[in-house]
Length: 349
Image 1 (spheres, rainbow, N blue to C red):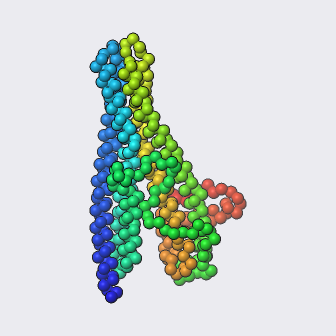
Image 2: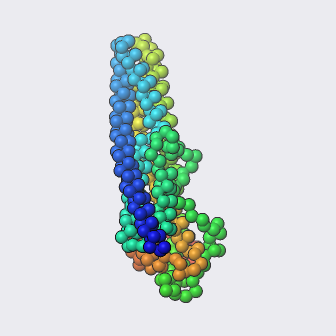
Image 3: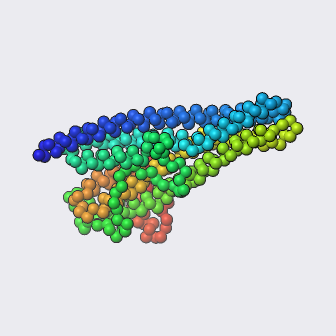
C-alpha cells in the first residue's frame, strides 16, 4: 500500500510538472507579445499625435482643408487608441507575464527538487496543485475576461500563493520554545524572527505601500490627461482656420502636451513600475505569512529546521545569517530607546 501511494504521488507530480512547464512557455510567449504591443502602440500613437500637431500648425498658417481634416482625424484616432492603451496598460501586462514566468519557473524547480529527493507525498501533490491554481488566479492569461484591475482604489500587494490561516492576535499566539530543540529552534531564534518581522512590517512593507500608491496616483493622472488633451486637440483642429488662430494654437499646445505625457506614461512604463511595486509588496507579505505560520506552530519539532529556516529568510532578504541577527539586535536596541530604526530588513530590493 505505501509503495502504491508513493508511486501515485510521483506520477501526479510529474503531471503537474508538465502543466507548469507548459504554463511557463505560454506566459513567456504572451509576455513577449504584450511587450510588442506596448512598443508598437506607443510609437504609433506618438507619431499620429506629432503628425497631427504639425498639420494643424501648418493649417493655421496656410488654411489648407486637407491638413485640417487629416489632423482632426489623426487626433480623434489617437484619442481612441490612447483610451484603449491606458485601459489595458500594455507595460503592466508585460510585467505581469514576466512575474508569472519567474514564479512558475521557481515552482518548477521546487517540484523537480522534491522528485529528486524522492518519496513525495500526497501533501506535496496537493501543495503543488494549490500553488499552480493560485498563480493562475494571480496572473491570468486572458486579456478581457479576467484581466486584473489596472486602477484599483488603493495599492494592494500581489498575492500568488494559497491563502494560509493565521490568527489575528498573532503576538499573543506565538508559542516560544523554552529550550533548544533537536530541530534547531531556540527562544533566541524565535525572538529574532519576531523582531525581524517587525522591521519588515514597519520599514519595507510601509515603504512599498507608499511607493505603490504614489505610482498608482501618477498613472491614474497620466491615463486621464493623455486622451483628454488629444480630444481637446481634435476639437481645436476642427475649429482652426486662417482667420481664427486660437483654436489652432490650442490644438498645437494640447497635441504637444499629449505626446509628452504619453511618452512619460508608456515610454517610462509607469504601469510596469506599479506592477513591480505590487510584486515587491507581495514578496514581503509572503515572507510575513511564512514567518507567522512557522512561529504559530506550537510543536517546535513539527516546524521546518530552525537553522535552515533562518538561512532561507536571510537569503530572501539578501543578507548573511550574521547580518540578519544584527538587524534583529539593532531593532531591539532602538525599540528599547524608543527610536525609529533607519535600516530596512531587505538589501535585495
